[in-house]
Each structure stands twice: as structure tokens, then as C-alpha cells.
Image 1 (tube, rainbow, N blue to C red):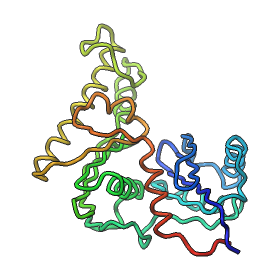
Image 2: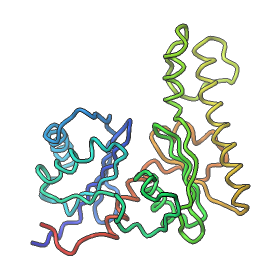
Image 3: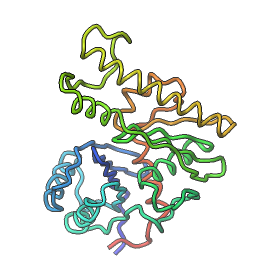
Length: 265
């Protein structure tokens, strides 16, 4: 039976957060950022999802489809089972063989995280190429797409939260601090000094990597920032042209549209 609804659920499962979005008629209507919990079952996630449906005013029966990108392999089957059991939709999981609309020149192609490919799809569709995507997540990743729409690779760095956790765990006298823009570079107490080191040190690292990427490409390139910490860090980095925290959800919608089956069960 064909489903004429235009409501799409996009699910981006990251190591730290899982981001969900409802798209209606091609527009992102609402989205949520949840903590990724590897020990939750499909039924537990199903209860959570139904609560989100209630809050949004939608019903699972309205869905035209579900599309999932995951970098947590242990959770992917549970999320797919949730879609089938609780949402009554066979999900599209972003994996090798799915149509993306871009060429992947990475070696081997299957080693690229699904979120990185999804971001590349969205950035190229919206901004054209060449484009660099900086994703401030558990890891900070830089992904490069050429003028021809070729994903050629990038850079992977430990995320700022990983750096903060490592400092707290390895140095007994140093406290854990909230990651936010400090008032000054020179910290006048331990918390201020750590916060400054994390924030400005990370901003300079990102700016430096982008400078080297631009030099290697030897052409003008647009830089798009996304990810959970992008709204905190991107404003400090002049090399970033566009801030788009929901870029991954846009990419998931585009991939769904490029793979959409004619019939839904």
C-alpha cells in the first residue's frame, strides 16, 4: 500500500549524541539531541520515540520513511528493529550500496563513517564544491569534497570533549570544566586557565588545519561547520564560512530522496 505522507524521520546515531529530526515536505520541522545509550533496547528506544511523537503532535502512522546513519555498530540493529516494530517502517540505513550522489575516493570506501558521507552529501548539495565540512562531535573531523562532487578524504582529531576528559582523568589536581568561551585568554584561576586552553587551543588547531587544507587544494573553498559543539566554537574561527548545526539531518533527507522506494509497506 502506498503511503502519501510527507513526514520523514531522520536519525543520526553518534558516539555521544543521537539526533532525531522530523522533515515535512522537505523541510526540517523539529529536531532533538539525545544522549546515546548503548545499553538501551529497541523497546526502550521505542517508548522514547513514541513520547517524542506525542510532543511533536505526529503519529507513527504518518511516517513516509525512516533513514538512519550510525557510527555505533552495536546500536544500529536495535534502531532498525525499533523502526520495524514500533514505527512500522523498514528503515533505510546509510551503508555501502546506498545511493549518495557523490563519488567516494577514500580507501577503502567502506571505512568512511556514515555521518561523514552524509555531511558531504548535504554540504555539496547546498553549497557546491569544493567544500570542507568541520564536524565538532566526539571526534572533530574535516571532510573535503571537490568541485566535481568527489569525497577525497579529510582529517580526524580527538574532539574537544575527549581532550577535556583526558586532562581531568590524567591530572589529579585539575578539575573538569564546562566547555564555553572564556572571557580572556589569560586565566586568572585554574578553571579559567583550563577553559582558555581548551577553547582557544582548539580554535587555533581547527584554523591551522583549515589553512593547510586550503593550501593543499590550492583553490578557493567554502567551509561549513556542524556538530554538537559547533555553535560554541565556530564563531571564534574566522576560516569557517557557514554554521549549520543540522547539516547531517539535511544530508539524511537528501539520501532518502535519492533512494526512496515507490511503495511503502
